[in-house]
Length: 417
Image 1 (cartoon, rainbow, N blue to C red):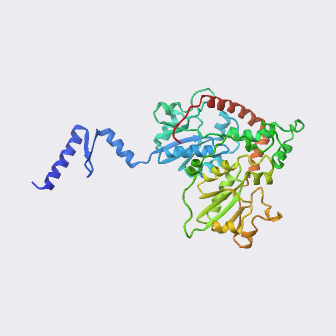
Image 2: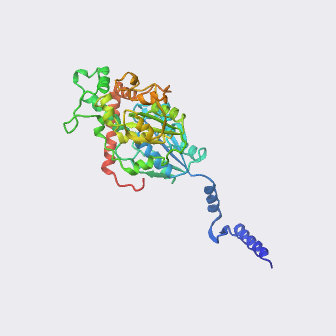
Image 3: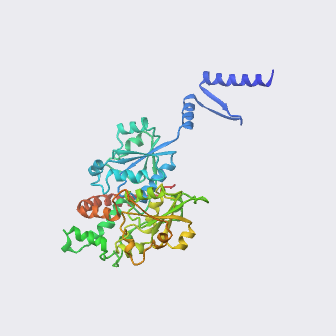
């Protein structure tokens, strides 16, 4: 019999075994053989042709690099990341009033380089109905959360149903930051203001704007960033970086600033800037530069924290960590910058009237452009929201701080990350 006939008989036997015995044996020209039940084989084929979709939800209020890192880790557990953004109403019921409204939080989450899809108005707790919707309509394979407990007001686990269904995976919480911590940095100024100013909100705002001195826990004075517990590592910067430089003929656009309390206004101006070229380079000013221009209480986030938040944005290709205030000819040559831009909504928008215009060189070269900012939001906008309702945020923070204290007391090492 010919070799073709032998092959045909072998194939027939293989098919017969599959149909009669419910077992699949052997596959591939490499002579690799497998054996498992037909039902499992179908699920295997389905997985092979379908991306693994993971889901993570959160409030993402005053979004920071900790949120970004959590979503980066979640994305690494699958092929596509779907993110649920909790509604303003649900946040208020479970935690207290949010600092940033839903539409701003949606802009922030959607702009992260690891996010593939966003679901607005997600519930605070994973209910049976919502979990079924995730599995059936959004084709979610796993629900993700950090190793810190997420408890409902009645003390129950918000992810109990996902765990029971065997569709839950855990990631490592990012060290050194939380929204509670950041709000606390701003409230520190409110708590330590003179008693005569207790009801004077405009005076509180001036504290932030002009940097009235404050005493730190060790008796010194300085900006709110001194209470940060962030431990920057080179590996974290690599994890957030794109790892790619500009091409040989790329049009490189440069924008700089403090980018403190990274917000939706920042995201939108970066989006416009990136659309003007092939590569967006962002300069992050030093803590000393920001303090000199905006007062000793600024920046709220330190240089490394601000750099990571900007790096996480999908519109950003690279950052200069500790960029000089002045955009010099040497700097433009070094980075081959084609265009320098600045937004109309910024806390230092009067740069043209300064004694030393930091953009004098690119202006003289005809490669400077002012962009109309899509949103009228600055870092001071966020601070004013806290100051104007500081008593509510104080109560919210006291409650949250207690749960965070318990987390750190019971914390164990989680591998990965």
